Structure formats: C-alpha cells, structure tokens
Length: 112
Image 1 (cartoon, one colour):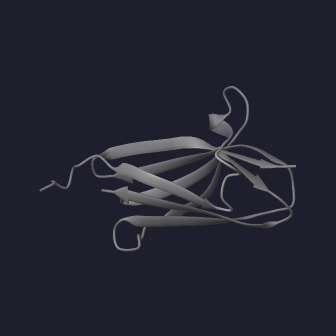
Image 2 (tube, helix red, strand yellow; image 1 turned 90 degrees about the horizontal axis):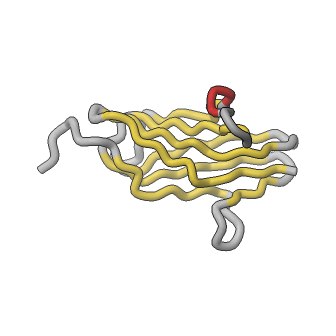
Image 3 (spheres, helix red, strand yellow; image 1 turned 90 degrees about the vertical axis):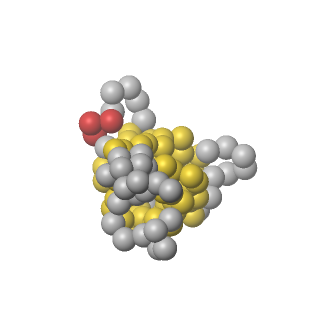
C-alpha cells in the first residue's frame, strides 16, 4: 500500500534513436524525431529538457516536451522534432508528482 504522497520514481528511460553501443550518447543526424520514453511510478507530469554542454548552462535549457497523460499510469513519452542543426548537450528528465520531483540527466545528445 502506497499513499498518494509517495515520491515519484523514474524506473527506466529509453530513447529512439537509442544511444550508440553501451554509451549514454544519442547521436542525431539530419532532421527527425527523438522520442524519450520513461517508465515510472507516482508521476503526474513528465518534462524533458535539453541542457547545452558546459558549466552553468542549466538556466539555458530548452523544453522539448511535457507529458501529463501516461499510458497505463506507468509509461510516459515525449517526442521532439529536431532540426538539422548542431546540438551538444544532455537530456534533463523531470518527473513530478504529489510527493515531489525527481530528475534523470545521464543521456548526452549530439548532432554535428
């Protein structure tokens, strides 16, 4: 039994396109769509942001998308249509619920 104020949890993150090899680097080419799928618990809203590389760049993050309606209460998804232009940064995934907010930021994104 879990009460409604349980802290949100991010149980897994999958991107399409997927990271290369065993790394956590997603390499983009041309223009296309980057989809971020999250399995989680006690989430009411999922936000995906792109934070530029460098020190102190979090305030310059770009919101890629928000999902407020999960698939079966456990699966969340954001799709970002990216242009054919350089990108170098990392994804910041924020899951918010009545019990607070948790973050995941281990996936780098690169577009030459």
